[in-house]
Length: 252
Image (cartoon, rainbow, N blue to C red; front, side):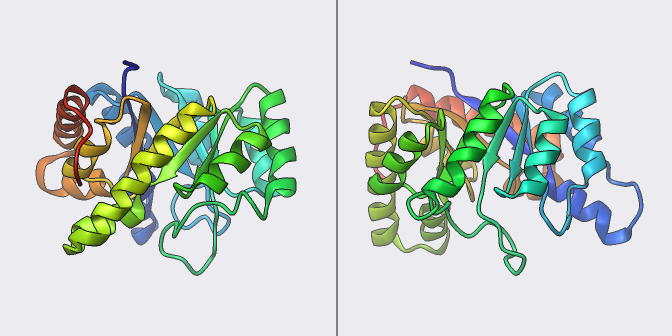
């Protein structure tokens, strides 16, 4: 069974910093602490409106952290230029709308197939590992394989929300959809990641799928850090992931 990696998203440390306009809290400090506590990589989303992470943050992260940097970005020429300059270990292409509070769903990889393919090709030529943030659907998975992205990150948001609000029937259906998508993506030779809305319990459950090799988690960990500290939140998340990995994939 492949080891399960934890990518810690530090976007919302920058959100707190930007609320006051000063230098603190520093996203780089959070990234270094996350790695010390057991993170396998750091994820940061440089949005078009720069609402949290800034260009200088990306450069500092690339220069200073000892673990891989995963650069989340929209598929735009401006972001492509930034990514090619920084050359992170990985890029995750995500949908982006200025009006959204957070990423609301997966990329339209079916409708955007021909638009996305050159971004994947150019980043790959530069030695950057590309993932596509997609819905857990057969159509999205097939399109991702056709685009030749080596990795997909399955959007777990619908399932996590259903669990959070207690809609058990919907949660069960969404979990089954994820289970099918994980098997489908791995069967097509894609590396499978998952993320969005995960907490200790949902991370434990999704970790039970042996084909999933990476979870990317941010908002929940930064929120938990208010109460228990970032290092402790990451240690608890790693423990939950390890428990899930040791168990059999089961019900939602």
